[in-house]
Image (cartoon, rainbow, N blue to C red; front, side):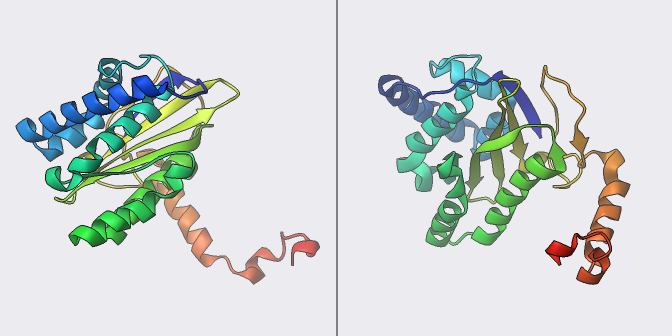
Length: 232
């Protein structure tokens, strides 16, 4: 996974700008697929520097949390009429749209005969990892899942830390990942460094195993000595 840290800004892009971003974003993504293939598009979108550069080319503020949501939105709406033709499907989005990711994945999968349950599981697991296994103080509010008819996928999601007024973007690419729960990030690009609970680090393997064993072994009776009586 790769990450990028940005100033947290509120609001939305003006319609005239969004319309242009959609048209240009469609043209760029279509060109990448035609000349370099679907895998290359996912690879580039999974690179925080390339993604940030794409946002600049599309005309958005280069240093803002909004570049994530607007670029993903522009790609989603721009590629909508070409998804079946290109074999690239974009699901999810910001806020409530992110909750519709599984529904959208299943829609495209059932329509084209893909294993939708597999993609839904990957989508949910990537969100779990960045919100629970990696506790860095950022709460996810944006989740975009992109997959191809070849079975490759990418995730672009973003969390916010209102206290520090910053947002952090997380990138996933299926080709870079050997394990979803151990160092799925192929690189980290971040100016903000904090002490975090990182259960996906390779040095946390033993802790992950012990945590899982305890969770599987604990029964209601096992919790009773430490559970307040009113909760029994």
